[in-house]
Image (cartoon, rainbow over all chains, first blue to last red; front, side, top):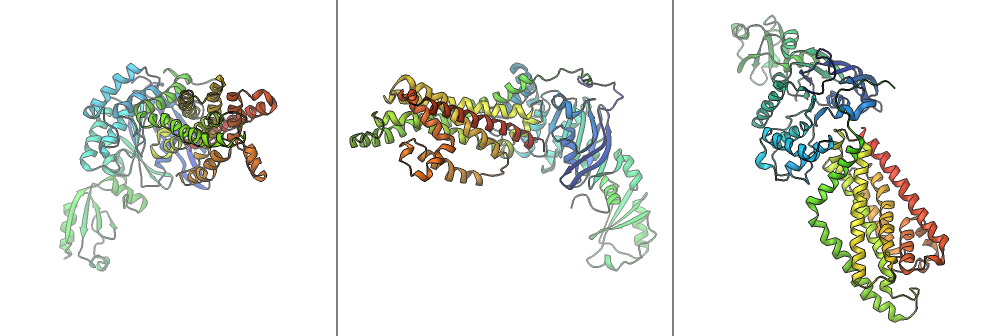
Length: 315
Length: 271
């Protein structure tokens, strides 16, 4: 990729003690992380965990309250515009210009990066192709579907051929089909070597897109690793979900004790962690318990989050 | 100061300023049909109703209330300044709210090499451009109506633009603190509309009750109106100090307003 400043082994982003306060409220509490070139790095956490505040500091639009951060080897406090010239930002809320056409949105954005009109127009047409929006080039933005607007925002963020893409909850609010299309486009970018930094509160999104991620909760990082590492460290290979008829779960007492490696009791179901989910369901039946449904599934980041914080990720 | 050398080309500030302005121009080029008719129609309607209609009535009264010139000529330069001021005030409101809240255009711009200063500049430069366009159209209509007493009417254009900025820039600064138009509606109802009526546009301010006359001094519209009228009627030489004071006050208001606007844009964007 053009624009990576340091040798390939040096991180593109380094944060030490990164802190953001709003008055007496601490949104980000002294977090450390690094992002390597070509990596897909994720911030996973519930709403209010501090993900967006962190992204805004990386995006050089929010001054640090404490700590330090280097992006492409530069300090945002001094070189904000220079760093931003190498970033592609997809904000959580659409900021497309609804008074302009789809294509105008891209062309004018290219002009912000100092591209000539001709070059900006050429890239705009390529990106419309990439975002599968060529047929809508002349339309205004408003009538586009949510998924199309997201794709246009991503196309817009690519107009400067960025070294780093910052995506804040890129698929929140989209229907499953639109999400999968978006993931597929982001995966292509990843294959081209674009460094992706994204936030999400969807564990399936984190598992799909992230090489490595940090789990954030209450302004802090509570765990870090690849999705697989985190699952291995904080969960088990398989999870058996047991749903009992209404009122029965409360009467179980200690009758599940000793089954599996660990048990989590949620209001509506019991999760049993183990390496062999089928063995767990057999053991449950052997004790004469009759769950209404039994689901054996692969362990996910949701289980990691539950383990780390004691709470479900998406309520 | 040693800075880590970046092997990518640094963005040039001039590109940022130009691009921010260009965005505003593009918005106008894509949407001008909605507003340009009004730019022509408004002066025609006002000059017809107030100048020709009311004017024939005033002139027949024979009281020489308008310094010996026909009421249409007395009114025209003042009406230009007042109308241009209202347009500029609106320009300082809705695009700013839209930029920060509705369309979030400024936030999109700020994610790029554009600085808060460049973004504020783009908005201000466009307001000046559009205000100038409105003032020129108005001046042309005045000439077509034979409402120009002397060639000094051309001064109404820059005076109108300056008066417009003296309103628009501080209003823009204020609007950065707002999330909706509630406060703005009150400003318009209790500020802009009374100003339009009582700042000497339709009758000299010495006809106002003594008690509220100082208000005309404090708020900048009267200074623009009185200056433009004196230059258009060729009477500025009769009170050079007063008219110099008008200009200084307008420049000071505009200067402070622009400074406040730039400061507020930066605070608002660096959230």
